[in-house]
Amino acid sequence: MKNIILKWNEISLVKRILVGMVIGILLALTIPDATKWVTIFGSLFVGALKAVAPILVLFLVMSAISQHKSGQQTNMKSILGLYGISTFLAGFVAVVASFIFPVTLSLTTGAKDLTPPGGIIEVLKTLLFNIVDNPVNALINANYIGILTWAVLLGIALKNASDSTKTMLNNFSNAISQLVKWVINLAPIGIMGLVFDTIVTNGLSSLVSYGKLLILLIGCMLFVALVVNPIIVFINIGRNPYPLVIKCLKDSGITAFFTRSSAANIPVNMSLCEKLNLDKDTYSVSIPLGATINMAGAAVTISVLTLSAANTLGIHVDIGSAVILSFLSAISAAGASGVAGGSLLLIPLACSLFGISNDIAMQVVGVGFIIGVLQDSCETALNSSSDVLFTATAEYAKERKESKTIAVNS
Image (cartoon, rainbow, N blue to C red; front, side, top):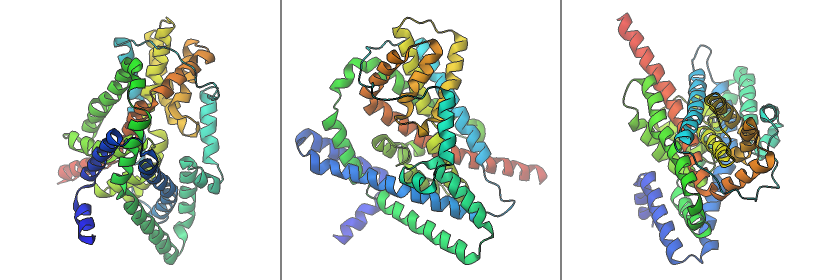
């Protein structure tokens, strides 16, 4: 048995995940009544990732900053710039696509009990209050903005601590990283349960009537992932971006697609950054930060559903308003982390730009929940995989710049 386990672990994680997917599909088609004992694997896997991620972020960031030496540069400014550019362009792509392929909706109910934010000020206010959240409360509720804030502040405060204290922090950080590796090794079994649950619970029949909307949403996200982001990467690193893009989609996007949680995918992204030999001081901050503000997929969802609502009501949208919508969707998406319901609950905010009433907008949110199985999966895959993509891009761009400087000086 031990030899079998060792042989299994020697196979690449992506291949093992694909095996888990195939088994999940076969079980869903052959024994759909086995819901309880199969789906529990998926729930346990996502639960384990969500449980370990807040502690991982706290100790990893605190340890990295406490041991950060003065004068040692990180790429956070570049990464934040890439996050912002990508999110805005994603919203713009969605706007252009909605003009070229206009979609109307069959409005539905089902989101009456939800309370969307009243405006962009409320979204930003929520974001600011998350920053000053109680640290224990931030850990319990997986408020990563709050966790990051406390980790950064404690890390700075511990810069002058004794070497033994810094060693202890580093040991804790390494121990939690090892726990993460153990959890990620369970991904094939977890993905099996998640695939089984998705097929048995939802199927595809309920999505047929919203086929055009789904094609537009997923098409925009694929265009951003396979065209827009590679162009951004190429401009920065000056070489073929697709090996890096594909690796990020394969190693991060697949798990994010099935877990449908950027927070749950933080440990996966941390592990991928380690494999890519990226700077730990940088990715320990950029990955959890990206999980809260790098929201290209959310910008696509907000823009497409808002313009679909406008088309349904016969509202003419001019070019200027469309560009404003791109900015609004990008800013709203970046502040969505503190809003229950994520990107869908920001649709009423965007709809208000065109004078669409809150009652109609909440019906659009109801449509979003119906297609949420695929919409949210693709959105999370795009968001989470690009966290690693742009962290790596910033580091490779820095290396490129340094090599040019050396070449010029020599």
